[in-house]
Image 1 (cartoon, helix red, strand yellow):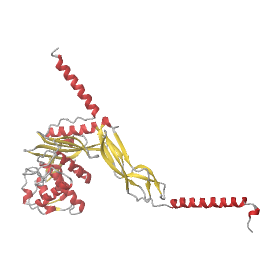
Image 2 (image 1 turned 90 degrees about the vertical axis):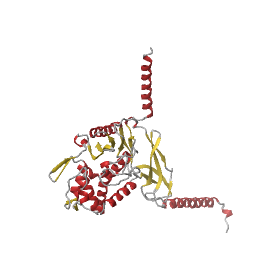
Image 3 (image 1 turned 90 degrees about the horizontal axis):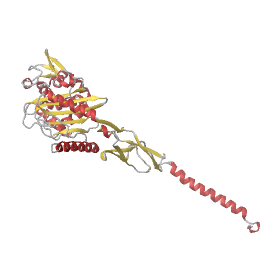
Image 4 (image 1 turned 60 degrees about the horizontal axis):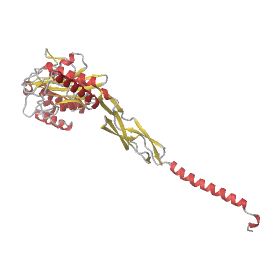
Amino acid sequence: MRMRLPVLFFIVVFFVGLTADEMSGVCLENFPVNAKAAALLDFNSGQFLLEKNADEKIEPASFTKVMTLYLVQDGLKSGAITLKDMVTISERAWSMGGSQMFLKVGTQEPLDVLLKGITVVSANDACVAVAEHMSGKVEVFVDEMNRKARELGLTNTIFVNVHGLPADGQVTSARDMAILASHYIKDYPQVLNLHSMQEFRYNNITQRNRNGLLKMNVDVDGLKTGYIKTSGYHLLATAQREGRRLIAVVMGAEKPKIRESEALGLLNYGFRSFILKEVFKKGDTVKTVPVKGGTFDTVELIAQDSVVITVPAREKESIKTTESIPAHIAAPIKKGAIVGRVSVEEGGKQTRQVNVLAKNDVPRGWQRYLKIGGVILSFIVLLLIFRSLVGRRRPKDMVIR
C-alpha cells in the first residue's frame, strides 16, 4: 500500500491539473522551447501567442540585417534610391568578414543584386556598401536604424552596426524582432519574394539560404537566420496557411537544426491550437439608431477599424461584444463623427475597443419644421371647425343687427 500511494497521488494531481487547465482556458503557457528566448506572434491580429524570455536582451547577430533591409525598402519607396542604382564597393565593405558575397574593391554593382545578397546569403560586405550608398557613412545609417527602432517601439533594441557582427552594446529581444518583422512584412510584403529564395549566385559562386525551413515545404517563406558565438543560433521564421500568417522567433539555440525544429514547432503549435476570428471589418454596419430633428429618421453606425482576434481553438465561442452607443442621436450629425464604441471581450476580459462612426451626414431637417407646422395647422383647422359649429348653434334672436 505504501508503494501505491505516491502513484495514486501523481494520478490525482495530473487529472486535477488537466481539468483546471481546460476550465481556465490556459493554452500551454509552459510550451517547451529549447532556446534562450522565443516568441510567437500572430501577424493578422498582432497578438503574442507564446513567449519565453521574450524581453531578454540578446545580441542580434544577423537579425540586424532585417532593419538594414527595412531602411532600404523605405528608401526605395521614397524615391531616394532605385534598384538600378550602381553602388560603389569601398575598401571598408570589402574588408568585412563572416558571411559575404565576395565583392571587389572599386567595382560597382546594381542595388538589386546587393539586396539579394543581403536577404539570401546574409552578405556583410553588401550591407556596408548599401549603407554607404544611402547615407554616405555607415554611422549615419546606424543612427537611422536606431531612430526607426524607436519609431516602431522596439524598447529592447540598440544597433551598433549594419550587419550584426559582434559589437559592444548591440542587443535586441525576441519580442522586438517579432514586432520588427511584422512591420517589415506589413509595409513591404514583396520582400518575401527575396527572403524565400533558397540560393543566390554571384560571381560564379552559388550560396544557399541558411534558413533550412524553406526547403521543407511547410509554408515558410522567410525570414532571417543569425549566429555569433556569444549568443548562439537564431531563426526568425514566418509562414502563411489558409490566409493566416504567424511569426516565430527563436534565439540562442545550440545548433542550426535545433533553431529550425523549435521554430517549426512554434509555428505548428500556433496554427493548430489557435484560430483567427474577425469580429468586425472596417466599415461594417454595427447598428442603426434613431435621429431626432434630422433630414433622415435614422443613421447607420459603422466600425472605424477592423477587429481581428486570435483565440484558443477550444474557446472560439468566448468572444462577446458590449456596446456603448446612445439610444438616439440629435441632428446635425457629420459623416465620420465618433458617436460611440464597442468593447470586445475574450473570456470575460476586454481585449479591444473600436469606435463607431456615423456613415453619412444628417443635417437638421425640414421634418422638424413640418411637424411644428402640422401642429399649428391642425390647431387652426380645429379652431375654424369650432367657430363654425358655434356659429350654427347661435339663436336668430341673439343675432346682433
